[in-house]
Length: 244
Ligand code: GLP
Image 1 (cartoon, rainbow, N blue to C red):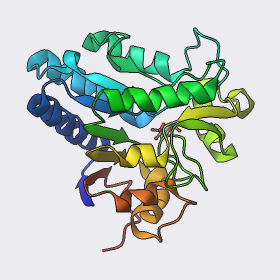
Image 2: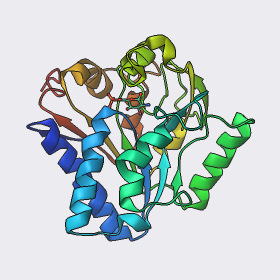
Image 3: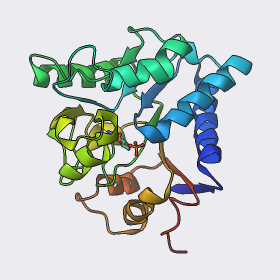
């Protein structure tokens, strides 16, 4: 595992955008695994502005998002599909056919999850998977006690996660869906390359436990130690609790 510490969040996000651009430039029609959350907004903004100045072929990529809430209305602005359209897909010229977000509204969720796994395989697997980290240590929505072998599936969200994400639901924890669909830890570990980004002081504690604590299913991000090509990009605030 490689750890890069940048002076601030802007620099950390640029580092991640540069890594994604390097993969897209090298691969041509790359398959990108994408993440949502406040942390990623600056990454996507940076990707779009760099693409406008010096295109590497972002519009030719195929994308797979990590997760989606269950039970939101189809046109909900809080859905991760809506987030991705607003922050990246529309401006990047990425069409519905190129972009995949798990279906949290499918009538048969299990079948939709199997289809999602099959679509990743049919695309040739993920070249680069972008990850954030939640305060429970989740990657995607793999809450504590997710098996390291888990696949795309429906999960219940931890109360801490619902609270952490309440800001997008007018601050009301009870309006955050109770369930979500997420790629499994096992699915994530099959990506050829993984980049985890965490910024801000609120992430310092969980970052230290994820990177320097014991490997445990209580913190899904500790599974990343089993992957041969992981880069963790932090700002100094998120790196503050790491010990030399
Ligand atoms: C959600 C997503 C995660 C993301 C996390 C961090 O819970 N499911 O994939 O890593 O948010 O979000 P933020 O960047 O807003 O802290």
